[in-house]
Length: 240
Image (cartoon, rainbow, N blue to C red; front, side, top):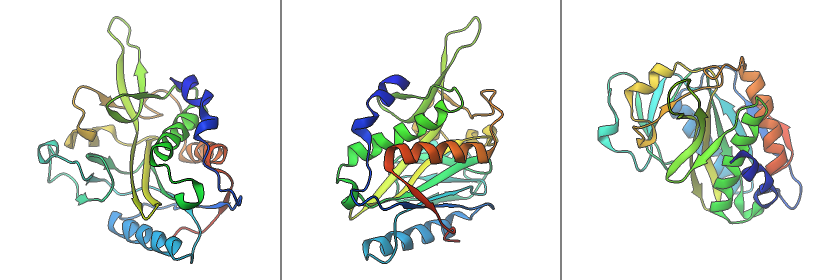
């Protein structure tokens, strides 16, 4: 699946015709979820009004659960464990917390082609490209959102674990929300929900897979992959 995605990456490229770089901002301290969403929404409005450029915002959140527009109440197994936030993004319940890199993607698809399917596929290819930097083969599965890895266990059938989630929203062709990549989160925190509504598979992380990857390492891989698929970036101060 990795080769299939990367070999078709030419069809997934979404550069701006004018070559304008997207902003690239990294927050070094955990950002509370409500404040992050408010800042993200404000930036989207500024992009729509022509007052600000595109932005990729990398951050971590304190431990929390979010419920996407398709979330089912029964999938919140421990409602009192962490704060729970309703969100506009697609998808179901997911966890955010320290050790997980969240990338909020605010891109103007009016300038990059008004193709939602291609945009989502390009985000998936972005994650797979970043994982390949650590010799991890990320894969896609029909009917399951996100990026998965197959784990071979001696004497047992292979199992599949989720390593990255994806949930986006468009407002008049400007995107927000984005992806989350498990670098080294506390994987036990996922047990308070049914992640993305999938019960028969688990979750994993780069470190759980035996890769001693730091957040800076993950950021470098994400940045390189983003530039391959979406074009140049320029460093920018985080919104918060």
